[in-house]
Length: 218
Ligand code: AMP
Image (cartoon, rainbow, N blue to C red; front, side, top):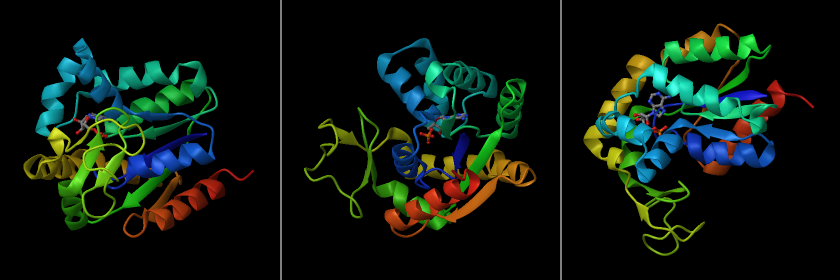
């Protein structure tokens, strides 16, 4: 079961991904989280990705694709994975499709979270992220119980450096130019479920799980 959770930055991909992996025993492969972990640990990969991330640009396709292929080769991905933040360009999508096809597999579902730009800009301004576990909050909609401290793991919660308004606008432009064409690529393959990504997190989550149940009936 290979599923892509797809949408613009701030669409709620990470939030819904956490719910999906609770309901289905597949690992979440989040490229942004992989880069941030490498950045924290000061690895060569983290150092290479840093400039792109801070500018709101995409890390080069070859680099990201190799990281994802290495990750998907690990034992826990044998029955599938939930891809969060990958693919983000048509070359990445084609790489992924070919990589899976070589192994007799394919993407079974793309959950496309549909959120207008105006909502994204408002959401990202108030978004706060745990520096350790990646849990996300919103200063007014879903704040931490104790200011600045993650409810889940007790670590520090901050505004991601790339969540400032100027970088968010660049990330949105990057999304529209390079990432959103992927939807039509997968729509042509008949595997896209559009889910309205505005409203209560629970209600959106119900629609996401419904789409997965429909695509993978038991
Ligand atoms: P995210 O946490 O998914 O919003 O990703 C944060 C940043 O990591 C992005 O703005 C990109 O700079 C980089 N990144 C994450 N995933 C990818 C990808 N699939 N391709 C290129 N860059 C990526």
